[in-house]
Length: 288
Figure 1 (cartoon, rainbow, N blue to C red):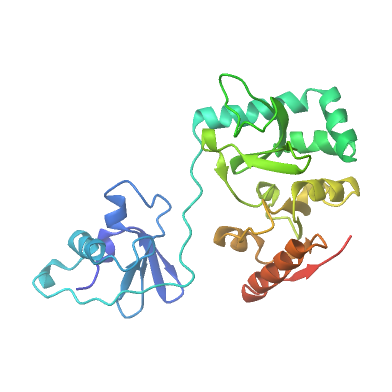
Figure 2: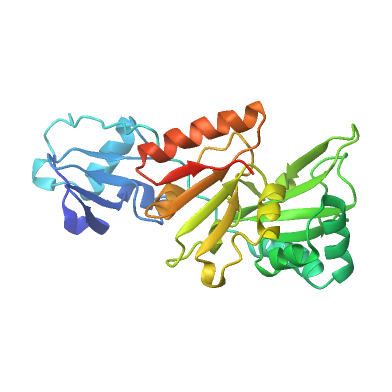
């Protein structure tokens, strides 16, 4: 049984395929981006989220199939894309936004904090302030309203703002630098740090293995070009896999990776080289 396009929400052509909102997902309030359902040239269709789920496919046919063929047995083959589609980043709640903005405002309005953070890590105070102004860095204070990510975390600490996450960096009890995402508030979703600053005019994107290295590049004047023609981003951790939407965001731009010289850095370099070469994105590495 074939699907009727008039019964689908937001169908759009992508080469020889048609992408639309999956009616079975829409029925339960999902697929708001309208891109779960793929219909191929031969009429075969698949929901990217419910791959191989026969009951889900049957429900799609019930909602958008040709009723005149309803008595025919369902034998549509199942398409399994590789790699599987990743879940979309969640939309932030009002409370999550308030926590982020509160930490950004606290840092952005305090010359003393900017200078103190910069002195500890060897950054320029102006770089720290610019990061707060870019809405990518803040200072979080934990109290009865916002809980610590764990007991080892100090009462207040610098934090890095992600699209749907808040990452706290601090010195652990063993004297080693560590970090935690704010899981207690659901702010624990990883993405490229500062990727929101990439615009249509961005030509070059620098990616570092961590936020401290990104700030050091900014100290050197990299990424400080007016109009965001050049943007410095960071992986949330060395093992991070670039998201599909981030690959599309970086397509058509020059990507430069600045890895650490340890084993984790070399592994990240190999993984990113494979990812960007496969996506046909201009990619190189620089050791600073």
